[in-house]
Length: 343
Ligand SMILES: Cc1c2[nH]c(c1CCC(=O)O)Cc1[nH]c(c(CCC(=O)O)c1C)Cc1[nH]c(c(CCC(=O)O)c1C)Cc1[nH]c(c(C)c1CCC(=O)O)C2
Image (cartoon, rainbow, N blue to C red):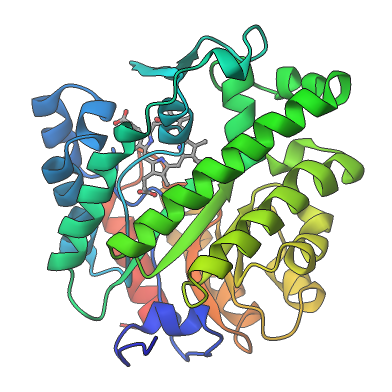
């Protein structure tokens, strides 16, 4: 596959170093944007937006139109995979996602798979890919099996992922079968996104930090390695970004063990340490503290300088260490873009 020279972020994912790093922000389409809040109020709920390909395309493009980020990320959610596997999914206003029945109490075999639920998401990919400017990289994504399993087991977000962690020790075979089922659904879904027009994909492992080293090897590294292996067999040219949030000292093992093309760093990672620790030339993405962006001022300027200096000699995509917070002032995002692009 030949990459148009203008897709800078995609080139960095392929190992090219840039003086001015490309930038996008996790959760860049969302509640900090007034134009998102307007559409959300008109349409009702988050899922209604995510499954309406016209609304989801518009929301995917909103942050590109406003800020000119180097990448657009598909507007969807990691929980559409459990939904397509047959769990009911809804969002409680002000609280977050709910999945039923909970896997801690129900067998996976009792679910009725509903893969057609993903069709509108792939329609969104086709629509966005037909309208994006050629210099904008289009990112697809999915949750990583461990993180998705924590929601499937508990039925909602949880403080310490204890239901899934307990299941993984008490019933390793049953838990392994669940992880395998998520891997299979995820590889098909990501292949579908690539075929519909995304340039690269990100695997979000938001709860990777809750596991011991041995369990991390088993439930984070091995399943992500399997996704990389199977997806590369189908689409060798589409880069894969792994984001094992909270992996800390296990980041290098994750990078080597999974074979991802680039690694996302959360804000707790010292970028200078990461630069020394990670394989030479491996592209990194991150890792501004979302609260430094809310704060603005010298907190923001100093943090940006520190990240830029740490990654001056490796392929780097500027991003936050986690999703942008709803109370982030728009002017701080504009200031961040000026700092990174030295405008
Ligand atoms: C764990 C997780 C989820 N979803 C996601 C993760 C992994 C990353 C992370 O750790 O944040 C990933 C996600 N969720 C969303 C995207 C869209 C793309 C993007 O802009 O990055 C992405 C990549 C939209 C969303 N997903 C959600 C919203 C907010 C919906 C709204 O109320 O309007 C958006 C824009 C809802 C959501 N979705 C999820 C939760 C826990 C919640 C509720 C908390 C919250 O509101 O932030 C599950």
